[in-house]
Length: 570
Image (tube, rainbow, N blue to C red; front, side):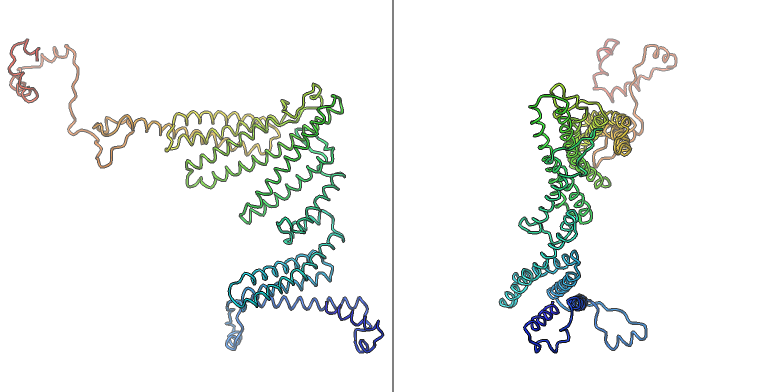
């Protein structure tokens, strides 16, 4: 810049006829090319020294001393770490100056993308320095106000015009609209503020690109849905489809960035914008269908109705597919995070709620319009309200409904079988239903030849069947234990040998009985023939012993009674 100004002064002095102003100047006879070469040379030196200054402000190496030099000669020197020599404010100043000089060099060399990046870094740093100076509490207030004015003026009056000029050159000299959009989107110069001029410029470029692509041949002029190639004829609908494609690219880029940054705020906003894009396209197609409904049926009218109905079905299916993929990823994440430490009742409720929403969306997918042929509109009915065309799409949708019903029943059964709920009968019924639905879904998915990810889905269903059978055994055992524990307990006084089939636990603080020692005698009911045979082995009747037993176990009335009838009266 200084070289250019100096050259202009020399030219102005020579033009005024003053040899005294430029007669002794060695640059008097330089050509414009030589002036530019000298300018680039000086800017390159300035950028080099600015980079050295920036490195020095952030360096953590200590300055070498005489002892360090002697140790280095002996081969025993080590680099010592220390704090940076300046504070953060000075480091930011040095970085802003280095970025500004690199931007000047890139500007002079017509390297517009590099200049934009460097100027944007310098602009951001100057604005940060200005806000820090204004918001600081300590120090001289007049000095802080002076610093605020200095950095604000540098940012608004020096760097910002250069940045706008670089963006203008990017637009005018050699960048296609797609390249401009990608550069502005990836550049840190575009903020999320609604009044940002670069943000409005990005929106205007996107609108111009969509207009040009909609009027020409683009990738979204035709779509493939349910084995039919559909032509998007109207300009408004084609622009809506191109906008969806652009929004999808933004969302996928945000998803890839969130996988590294562990944040989901920007991704959620772009995801909702993508869903709104599908809703807008569906609304446009339905409006055109309503206009065609008033026309008399014919080959051309029916063909347009067929195409618009398939566009409606395509947009609804893509939207439902995105929502289902997101919800199923959330459910898988809950299961994966808590699988090792065990899922609680709250986790089962969350997963069951997600699969309930997935099942509703899957049923909506099975009912989306589309498919068939233009002849289906001959009877005056449109496919926009649904279709019963048996095709591969409908078979896959029904198989997916069975799969999600199986998973929903399984996690509902886990909820009912939880110890805090204890509804074992309902859990067993739901597990039986889940196993039956999983087997039916496996058959349906196996019959689909072109289903995406069929092998993965079949493996998941096999795992559900295995887990269902194991869970049934656990629920049965828990049910049996709860029933036996409530009906019989160790408090009954029976020994363990008499309670081999009773699943109970003795109360705390008691010792369970294994057996009676010595074994207790049990009364037996004997037939009269037993006594007839026993009489043959009785030598003497033990009257005294019998009387003693009667006295011990009787109530004293037995000894007073005499006679055979008296024995019966006891």
